[in-house]
Length: 415
Ligand SMILES: *Cc1c(COP(=O)(O)O)cnc(C)c1O
Image: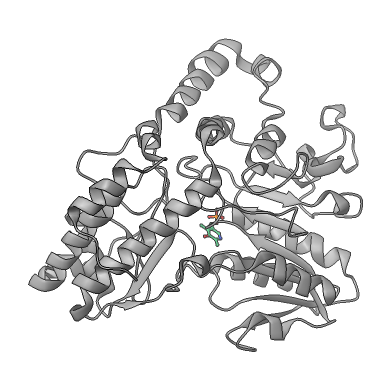
């Protein structure tokens, strides 16, 4: 890497940043350097005005009529199409609903049902745990189903794929290390073995360009409260390639997935297209918040987002290595920006205390057990000057040993 930039160089980078004005679309508290948009994205006036309108006009004034007059009924598919544009999905293949965990459950069952003579689910041992927990739950309801894990049953996921594999559940970017997978290559490998693949996009939707259709992916899930800024607990999404819509069935066959929900028929008749992945009534206020958050992306070029994301994360690594190298931090993320999502993780034996000390000084990242300190860089509202200041504070905390104060060792419920 080139010479470590100084503050003047950093200011010039901010001045030349084509995404700089996007920062004004978000509200962040004064003085806070927010490096946790990979866990909970920032709030925006666009979201507030959608919430306000949905609550005070549509709900309060239109009441039950709003399902029709305000278009509430179609929101899961309309938002799905809007979100689909950010993940390389043509219309009609994405639906907003439920949580990522629930959607994984639906898709694993659906995929296993499409490969009845196969019994293996392949996943990653270092996956975000809920993905594995849901796979365990699915396997427990289908006798004979087995889980094969990368890092446990073989070092690389590719080695686990053979003709007994029904479905591969894999993260596009690993939540802890930030490692990015080659979607097209792994999808091809899965298909060559006759298997289906489900991509978990929690750490890539809104973080970098995703090309589901182009990669020929079968299915995907993801959440909307991280890089998409939909708000705490905003609904997740499902992508299913159109070619599968004719022969895919998910087990949570609620009335919203019915062909005629308002006919109130006794038996289940599966709905057409992507609607078959719906189950019950969706959280309208949360969906409206998400609508506001997604509208912001209408003016954003995802290539510019990726470019800035790599520049921010490269800069952070460079400054940390130059200034904090002596204090026991070890880079956990790939050094090569093209192999990395929009986050940087370091290992530190007292990572929890270090992160608590950072947060007290208004540099907000997060901690992942046992020893990862994680920093997310959201190009829409994080600038190069923020990176500089964050490293300044980190260096101070490490050099002075400020993190060793007993109050930083007290565990909080959510890290
Ligand atoms: C954040 C995240 C989830 C969250 O799942 P929910 O059911 O929405 O709580 C799941 N998987 C991955 C990989 C995540 O990063």
